[in-house]
Length: 505
Image (tube, rainbow, N blue to C red; front, side, top):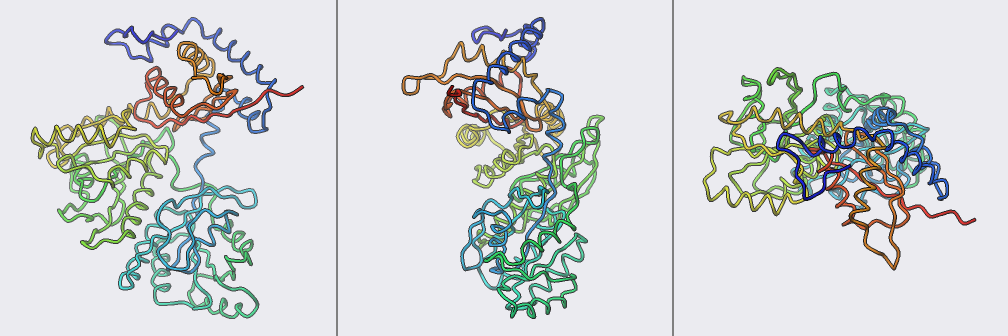
């Protein structure tokens, strides 16, 4: 049985320990109750996907989790060649924003896609700067970031215009990166454009595949070629649990990511300068901390100019995303000596959206005075109200003060990220919770929680079957109690509700 809310566990006992100790003798009873609840769902209309989930054993979670790391295919090209149109064509739906001018793609860039039975992540790399003078540099940065993210690349060229100097610049970058590349000759709407496409052999990337992203012509052949180049397993997936855990150091430029990496490594591994954006490429380092080996990934911010366009934010976001996707846990560094920025909040949200474990490190603590500390606490309460579960560490990367406290915070976050709650125990917990705090009435009816199961770990994902709509506030209440009871500290958890109605006989 769960510990009542008004009774606190002993000081050396965590909420999870209290729950497990009380419940240990009732494991069989919990399992029997869960089996009965599962069997009761036979009276409800269930989809094939529901039945597959209900058939999962607790030991099957590893298999579900392993299937989540998909190979990444990035779509690259200069402005207005039709990248987002091609992405929409591949996805079979209008996801990426399309407009007849460069610089439209700004926000979400990764989508899960499927072709000929193969599932992969498709990355739409847009975010062009709209000032003409900066286009060449923008293309170069965009190509570098795309390669960081990708296992293979589709390079889109406007066949009606031909290869430009910017295209040739990107080709040189792609060659140096050594990633598999498929050349898409876009805007070939008929036989007349075939000759234009053939001229792109001159780029030296092999056969140009003539396509019309707008009309769908040739996209099937292009995808067949891309699938031949795309590896079956991503090089950017989650690290194996038996190897060193991967830690991404992320944050806006000049918050001290490289200084922290140098301090924990015990040597000058990365160039450090007061100029924001000194690190241009991610640096992976194998580092031993407190007797344990870790992979640290120092992520490049990108050079920030005084008159920065929104495109530069996009590149910084992509670089951060690349590092987060390669990691298991992210340490988000925030400069505690200055006011928290929108970019800080955005990086935290990226970690959550990617489903990675999270530690928040407030750097430059040695530059703080009492007044700034008071303001910082208010900022944290206001700006990070959604992530009270993230471990917090106050450090100074410059002096190394409290850097060693990162290790227990990382271990706590990763243990939570890996945590699995047996189905019987989960349903016992939910049964007690709902009995003590029923869902509010909706239209005179009270939705019932029918059954719950954890479908994966890393991060923990739960599916609740219910007889009616569960309000967002009640979902948040369930999440908060899950965290309190099972000590999910440092990891996002996902709860989805499937409303199922009784069969009509």
